[in-house]
Length: 347
Image 1 (cartoon, rainbow, N blue to C red):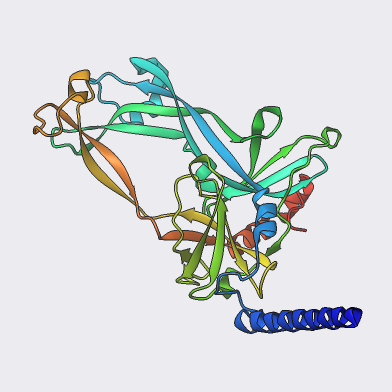
Image 2 (cartoon, one colour):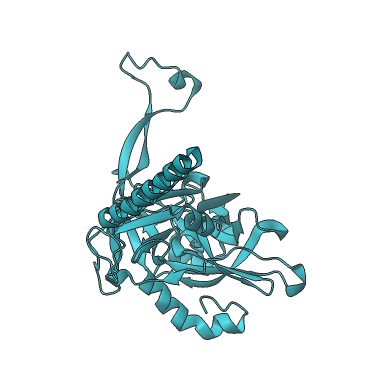
């Protein structure tokens, strides 16, 4: 008798458990349906994306670009113009020579790794520096004149990928300022056995994005690998499909990736590359940098010398995105070159 009661209780528990599970599944699917409409999703993913995002994040790298210049400074009493420098080498007429370097950091996506070769995608403006920089004199009213104060000539240009072997340097394989995209690469050789995780998800279509499409962004803001999210605005701003997102990004995110989900997780697609945020230059007044000025009392009005410095004010929350269509065009135009050099990306 006791055994029969136990059996009945066990059967009742099993039936109740099965009922609850079936109800929870029906309720879950009815509240969070997997939209099979072929469009990019506009709601927050209702299933975990951690595995896919971790895998993708391993293909994101931090890059540092540095340009080294030799600066020729001219006597303040000499009024040299561009025409004069075409006739006379600057080192012969300069009164001073100094060495300086300009650096920038950004994000790159590993798009190929095989046979000892590796290729990365980033923004052109992150790795490009002008060959010549010219500083002009100003008149008494502060207006720029045609007379040159100094000229800087680039002597060397290096791009590093943090953590890469053999000095971390890579070459610029393709640089397209028009689309603001660049492809970097390095040949380590088959014998090196070097391999990197690379992005092998689908290239999407930015032109399919809609107002309110949900996206993920991954990059290296201020030297930290981070994932953030955003909502698409102004889709198809131009003929190539540029768009905006409301994600808040910081310096170093340029070259980061934008991912959309089509018909639910894990269908991630690359839809764009982070370009920039609006920036406004402002003139700011600062106390003269001296020991005395550094100790001034902020409560008492400052009466010492001041100087003007240009300050960049970022307008956060408006992030410009390069559409993936620009990448597809770049790859199409340079496919033969990339294949010949041993970088068959996205094939």
